[in-house]
Image (cartoon, rainbow, N blue to C red; front, side, top):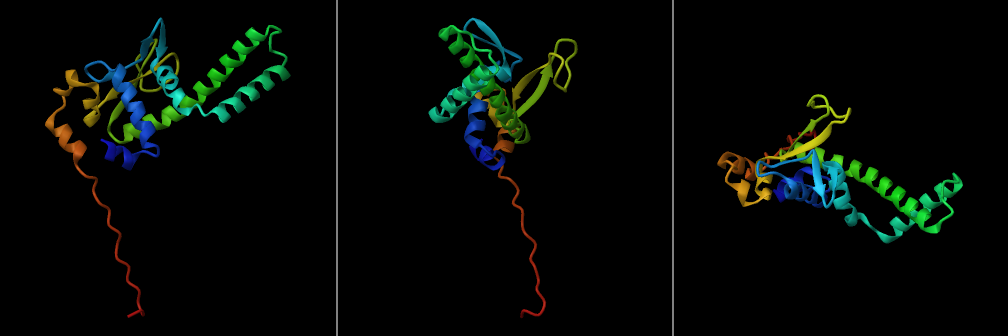
Length: 186
């Protein structure tokens, strides 16, 4: 599986963390989403994944710069309350919102690579009708497939077929370059 990620993903370690988090909350059938319960709150799967991966990207200088930029933006727009505690909460909430929005972009890229690698399937469940397109209160559901099913644990490992295991470990076909002939160089 790691070899597959290394070949197909621009950020294989990040993609593996995403896959591991999905497996952590997946049902025995390997399906995760559209909602995840965390402590007392219910989050969409994408919000849960973004929030879970946020500590990996917390570089102190970048986070401080973002916090300063948010504080400056809110002050310029005269939106900061006079109470320093309330102002700090407002700044932290806005930083969290921006970090989550940025994280969703990274998450979407990683999920698309996992889908292309055959390790994940994605579909959407929605308010009115289940539909493959997102929007209109439809939320992502990810399903582990192929060798990624082994991440769910022993309760699902029995359902991985030998065909899936063989296909997952089969090396990628090697591409050969055509030989070039140069006339007059003999």
